[in-house]
Length: 150
Image (cartoon, rainbow, N blue to C red):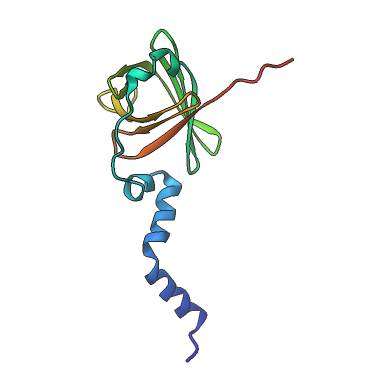
């Protein structure tokens, strides 16, 4: 028996609700919270890395979102979150390393009521680090090298 295109589409939607919902949630940035949670890896031994190695410009991307952090040597933090390359939020504050945690304290940020965010360092290298965020998602931050104009 042949199925009509409409019936076939309905059956397909019933078979793959997670993938469709996951696609929608990834578009708005919440999908990583639900489906990208993995077992915890051992924390990095941060004594192998100095705080000065975190100083610089870092970028993380997920879906249509992009976050830039500039971590300064005086513990100042400046950040920007963009959607489709359009800045939607600017952040300022301070940052520090506390054991295997990256602690950010934001100034006047209505998205984080306490103003403080503590993320666990899972992996650290010269050009990237991976965090387990306070909401349970993994986020890879890559160093941004500024190009000098001639």
